[in-house]
Image (cartoon, rainbow, N blue to C red):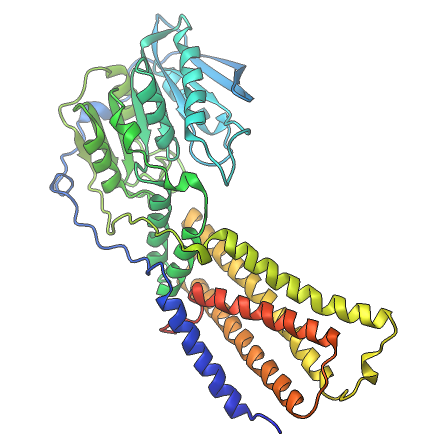
Length: 492
């Protein structure tokens, strides 16, 4: 008895449809941010006052000093730049964004600000207590406060005009420090998300997928993967710290920054400030780092920063000004994955699948070492082709897993570097989905061959049972996981 290819094809098609429906019905629902209707205050912004963008007239020689500052669990190398002239001068501490950056990334702006009458301090980011999986924003805030205290004790600085500057992730750190330590004179927030890290990353990723014309399934794959990540800091709520921040605040955003939902971020800041002491400026063409396409700073950035710091506590009557910001979609939170979509369960699934795949060749090798040649078993014509199917299944499953990981890395790199083109995304998505279908077809074919062999009197040995159970069971787990992540979804 044989099972025809037509029957197997129909069965494979039915299973693809079933897995597609399962992936569609399983929670969480699809991630679909609604369009954002900007508040009235953002629709017709006044131009930035000209006085804010004029470079300060006085230029000072600068003294540079590098020291090591002890903090909790670490020692941070720190560079202080001091203008040489009649002080005391206002002072500012740079607080870094995400990643393991060092003080060198602030050299050009720290030098410029020091030349124009502002003491600057930049320090290496801690290596203990900060990682990809775990980030303690309060601990980072303590480091910033240590640096503030250091500056305030120096005779060249004015303690009443010494504050914090934070970029990106630093926008979650600076408000914590400022809300706990009222002696901090002011805060500067550059490209500060003011929404949870999860919402910020999801918004930025959605913007890049729209730019790359990625299929809807790509967004669902990535957001379901994000929803399963169990990093606590991704759900951090910055609103309490913003509410407790009484200091005058300058918030700077670039209209060329695709990483920050700046309309919602600024609205969050406005709603959170207990007193009306904020200044918000949108700089035309500036990217996430206030540069133009990763090159030089946009012309208005450093003069705006210096003039505002030198003018604290005086505040401009124009609260929001600059180029018109355009945010097309809301920053929507990614739903947390159910237990079967969490990273822990995914890791367990992959471990079980890997165990099944390893069990097959190990068992066969053990049998051969004991001298029990499989070629002398009954129905020897049945097992060799089934064994070849199992090996192809293993390699296809590994190729699918590798392609999914590579595809996610490709999208992330495109997003971070503002690069890439839609053909690469479409091709990568096609490869991933084709491999998923090929893996399913191999399962159907191997199962059919096993059933035919059993009906023809094949006597399965214990070692063969281990191989069949391990490979077919591991691949079945992979298929269900692929269904959850939308690899069999519609439309194609």
